[in-house]
Length: 184
Image 1: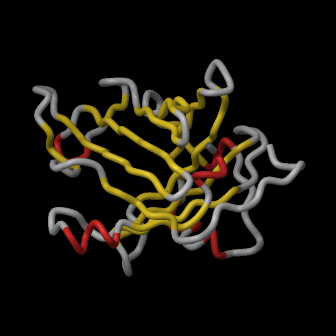
Image 2: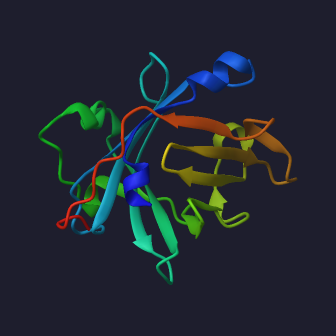
């Protein structure tokens, strides 16, 4: 699952065929954060051609078996200092002082044949964006890309942000890096 998340992805094809979706670019790269976990990704998300609107660290861990994993989500304390990090060959090392965990926002995924499927726990991920009380995320991850449906809901369970017609569809734009014996 970790290797499937590393790379560049975009939703450009979906945006061309459905005006309800923006063309979004996602870039994720491996970073060092030994005090947070063994498998850590830095992720940057932006509308195509614009500055990032979301930057996170994802710490990927086993979740009770070989077919299950959890992605713990961390916000950066100083996100602007890391813009473009995946293009920088001298990657940063992150410490717990650089991030804050989004408690309740972890994404739990289970292998289902050639893909991983899962999401957040129902109302556990608090959000105040645009009047939301909580956020949900549903993810399907494949070797050639992923779908992600992030939504915010108010206290009355009415959706206040996020796509309304279904998930964003992200196509992989670089091949999966080959696995090597030294990989976590």
